[in-house]
Figure 1 (cartoon, helix red, strand yellow):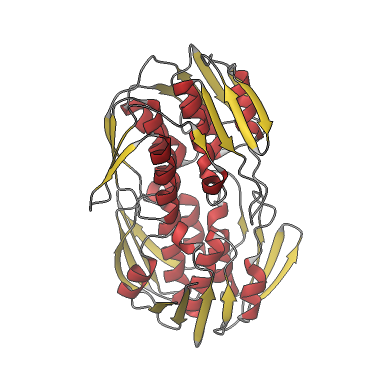
Figure 2 (cartoon, helix red, strand yellow):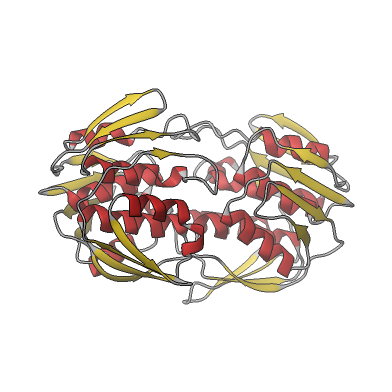
Length: 417
């Protein structure tokens, strides 16, 4: 099993390019199941989750070619095997995103239930409820969702909770349904908007993406397109927090500051000086780091995927802060690891109280999920001495070439077996 070693204490300095967004790329790759024609998807990050999704699509019948410039071509002339087996779904919950497109395209789908997750349950009941409203017959047997529908019919669907993958699954299914589908209490995340823009470029009729009501008018066929995935706002936010916490000065290229507002606002509150343009952000830390209160909520509020990174920042900031996690019930598992490094944190239900300390100290720590991995990397960057991070396979699911990028910013980091 691989580990990362980091020798901390060096402020980040330099320029990097932000990769394509994993959480946008995964559903966009699934749109290949909706058409007989070819798709060319650009700016796809090289990540373990992307590789798993491509393997899943390939075993369903999709022909795939990849070039060196992060561009992937997909053609699903025949969807020969509409099954998502447990072996693939268990390693990547986003595999549930093939359910809607498979059902809309072939009239049937069989997909393993994703099961639990380290950061919370994340049930798929809203996916099932929505497809049933569109006329699908769904049974759950032996751990698999079995869905059938000779023709999906447009429906008015009010989702009980805001769910990103639920919104994406139902939106994809509705593009080939007969009539009009309305999704109320829809997710507003930029990745949902990016998926809608890709579908529209394929001929789908979608209005309202980015709001909490999305309307989809079904069409007979979708056609080929070339589409570029948006930049990863969470990767951008992670590097900006790393620079702020380390007292650094960095410039991010190929990013989208207009979808990072809640994160940028908190960084400014922490004492960072930020400048930005259409596709770039520059952060320089000249003031003493100040603690900031965080309360996670669906977009456009503060993202849960940035909570762990800001906990590191608050650990060495001046003052006491409160971080309230409203999305996932088990997303404070990185707290114990940070405390091993000298952080002063108390957990009270879904709130963590963080008392800033002068410094963190390097230690051996273990990652429990993707964003906790990033949190521990950030902690290692600012800690005195050596930090060794175990279970970094989580990190490889969401951060492309992270060591290479950190090395270019002056970090002493190494991957070992």
